[in-house]
Length: 157
Image (cartoon, rainbow, N blue to C red; front, side, top):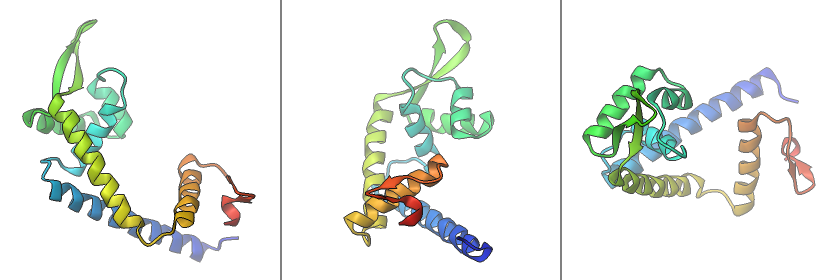
C-alpha cells in the first residue's frame, strides 16, 4: 500500500522523467533539423491520425488546447509547407487542415527521431523491464486498476 510520501515521490519521479523525455526528444528533433517545434510535431502527429482532414476545432479538442493555439501552430506549419488549409467541400465556411507531401515526409522523420529518443531513454532497461514498464504505463494511461502480466498483475510487479 502506498503512503502519501511514496505517492509524492512517484509523482516527482514521473515529472522528472517527463522533463527528461521532452529534453531528449527536443534534442533529437533539433539534430534532424526538421524546422518544427515540439508543439508543431504533436500537431502533425495528431493530424496524421484523422481519416480525413479535420477542422481546427477538432485539432484543438484532440490536443486539449484552445483554438487560438492551433491557429498559431497551423500558421507556422503552413508557412513552412507542411500543412495547408482547404475549404470544406460541404460547407465553404469551414476550413480543413491537410498534410502536404512535405508534411508527410517530416512526419516520417519525426517518427524516426521519436524512436531514437525512446531507444536512448530505454537503453538502461532489459527487454523484460521494458515489457513491465509498458504494462504499467498502459495501466496508468487507461486508468485501469490492474493488468494481467504473466500470472501477475501490474500492481504486484
